[in-house]
Amino acid sequence: MKSVIHTPTNNIKESLDFYTSLQFKVISDKDPTVVTDGKAIIEINPDRFARAGLKLYKNTWRKEVAELEKTTAVTQLETGHLLSDASGVWIYLVEGSPGFEFEPKESSFAVPGKFAGLSLETTDLARSASIWTALGFTNSAGNTEAPYIACVSEDGLTVSVMKPLNCPHLFFNPSLTYFNGGQNLPVIEKIRKAGIPISEEITYFNKQGIVDNIIIRDPGGYGFFVFND
Image (tube, rainbow, N blue to C red):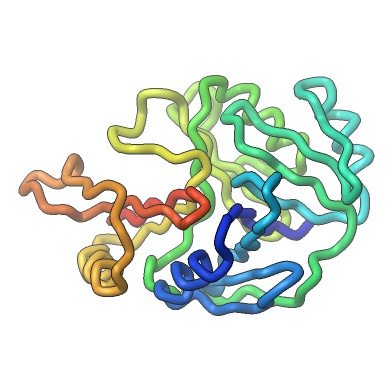
C-alpha cells in the first residue's frame, strides 16, 4: 500500500507557492502535481471533482471493498473505488501505482516541522475505526472507548481519529499534524516570515497565554495543525 495525501485546488500556482514557501519539495510538476516535506506525500489536484482526503494505492482492493461494503457505501471509479469514513473525509482506493517515484526520508525537512500524520474528527469513532481497520490500518494508540484512536498504514502513515468535543480549537477535516516537541515557537516565526496566513493562533494550552500552537490551511482547504506537543 502507498499512501498519498490528496488536496484539491482551483489554482495550481497558488497551491505550489503555498507549499514551496513552506520549503516543500516538488517531486512531480504535473499529471500528477506532487510535493513532499520528506515524509508526507501530497498530490495537488485541480480537477473540479477533487476533494480533500487520502489516496491509497494497491494492485487490487477487491477483498477490502467486500468488507467495507458491510459498513459504508463504496463508489466505483475508473481507477478504483471511493468511500468516506464517518468523519466525511474522502478515501480514494486506486488500483495500480502512483505516477511518480519517491522514497520517504528519515525526517521531515519543511518549515512546519515533524510530520505526525493525519487528524480527523468524527461523530462515530467505532465506525471510523472499523473502516480504517478494513483498509488494512493497524491500531497503534487509543481505542474506541478513549477520546481518540490512532491507526497506521502499511507504509507508516498514521491516521488519528478524534471523538467530538475533545479539541478546543478550529478543526478542519482532514488536517495534517506536525508535533514539534516544545520547539514550536521558532517554527511559528518561520511560518509568519513566509507570509502564510494563520487560521488560528492557539493559547489554550499555554498558562502564560503564549501562542505556541497554530493552524494554517492550504489553498484547497486542507488543514495543518502545527503544534508544540
